[in-house]
Image (tube, rainbow, N blue to C red; front, side):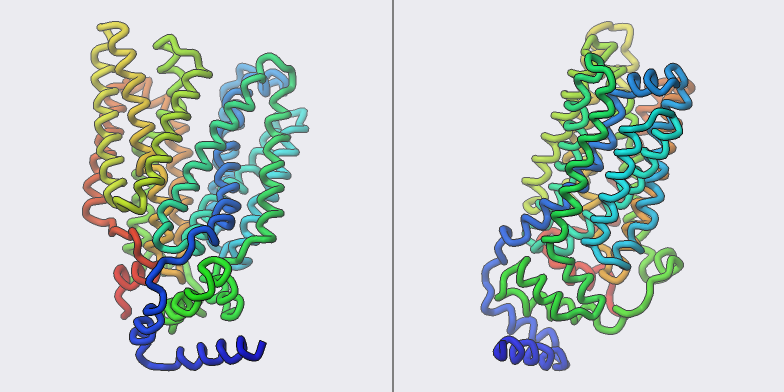
Length: 480
């Protein structure tokens, strides 16, 4: 015990030395090897349960919506059916808007538990509801949890992962979301045969939510958050659990070097929109805006109609889309720390633009019969696959990397709110735009957005592969 006290005292003394860079060099000498990835993996896996829940609740009403509307007495009411979906998105916007303040205020672990709570309450209300109002209240609760989960998961995974596997671990978020979507589709299969099965679909979602809330008790708090709160010894203990004892001193010195001077200041909203932080927040918000305006949700919403016209049943269509999404995510996981974030983003948006070009060709040659239908189906699957390779997983991983530690949580909240607002309007306006403009013009517009995204990424996004969060921050934001 005395030895430990002496060691931490010695560490505190070294922080007072003026030349931190020399100390950093010295402390890195004994550690030629990277820290073990096995230590941080369990913590990351628990965090991704929130992403699984996110995917599950996105897909849970797709199959059972008909049964829900029949049982609750609003069958054929398009507005009410739309509200069941969009109320969830409204809740998600609220959850994401406050996620930064919650994550900074109570810590990342408690934020996960707070995200699980409305998901459990909302799922129970929806599962037991007898009216449309009850269903909508349940969906609103679930939505707030869905909005809170993804930004906190991105923050936590970024802050607890060793830099050499941070990209791979970040990809787990997208894979968990895909698995959640596929899980919801699988659970929904018996809905037409078994009366009231949709209630079971909601009840089942309480199990992973309860596991998330309980398992978080055993996970470490983000050392970055602990250090920001002035809880240095706890941050050291967290780093020891995540990286191993020999890497603690280096990690703590980097944190101290970075945080010196401004860690106690509160972050105001105006600071995110003006001055020195504006550039990174603008890059983050624009990336999420381009991701949503590329047409990915429109493709998800509209895929079953396209497949149906090609004679493919909706269950099979959903399976194809799910497999394309999961396959792309798995490949992205393998490549994220090898080729880097920027390369994946560039090729992903370019591939999506090409897929939209295929859709435009298919829409223009509709008179040629089955050939155009196969082309349309092929273009759609290619679009989903290329989206999952980069445009899907990268923004959620890249943004916590490029945001300075001091504004990270709140900047993520702002960017995710932009994501949800655009998601909501795309869902609301897509079918109307399709009727007014026709598929050819609409797909051309989506393709143009994808090409604009290629130019934007090329000019504005920096590569973060293999760099520590501290190195990225210093590179992007020279100390003034």
